[in-house]
Image (cartoon, rainbow, N blue to C red; front, side, top):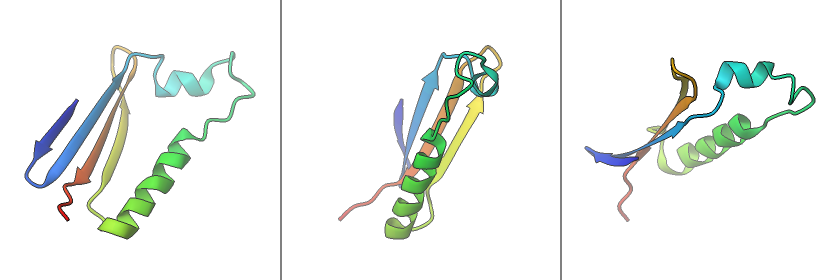
Length: 78
């Protein structure tokens, strides 16, 4: 879902997977090392350096399983 709000663009992604806490404990992927969060943080830092620090990223586990991720970006008009 994408929404515009007072100079910002909010991007919300709902994932109905196994959730953040369980995915780190899964025996199936014991030798797997996920770098997705590191990559996202690096890209956000690059955007902050270029456009300013008003960028937010938040991921939270949902009570019924799955994950909700929110990315808030400043609306840039050039």
